[in-house]
View 1 (cartoon, rainbow, N blue to C red):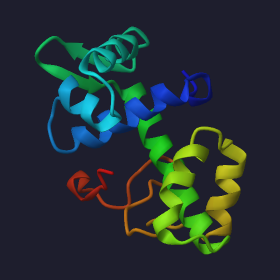
View 2: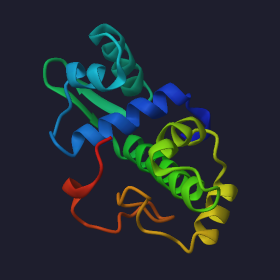
View 3: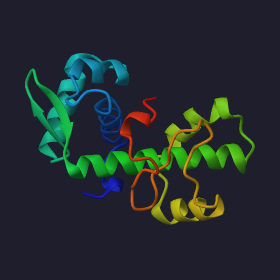
Length: 152
């Protein structure tokens, strides 16, 4: 399922499950609800939706994990976010402390063509302005250690 067919909310949940999954093998809906600033019931409903879409696997009281398709979407959203943070900071001169919220809004609408142009214009960077790794165009991390990935 192409990322562009998924709502920003679905993309945000996938991104947070991915990030939380770097700490725990299975992510609890309680932890997910906390990160998304929603009720546990809302998070549970979204997890069921993600499972129905084939993007996550959920076992009641055992947590949620991403399927390979869900992980691919999550890493792509993270890539977009971090490329945008770097572009906003380096090219537009926006303060590093301000780029996160702006990138959060733009990460969902960035086309693949614009992503490739930004990547090339920035010299194919491996880290964002906060020092967090940026996956490459093949969605591979520059560091093989997922524990070093940012959890924001």
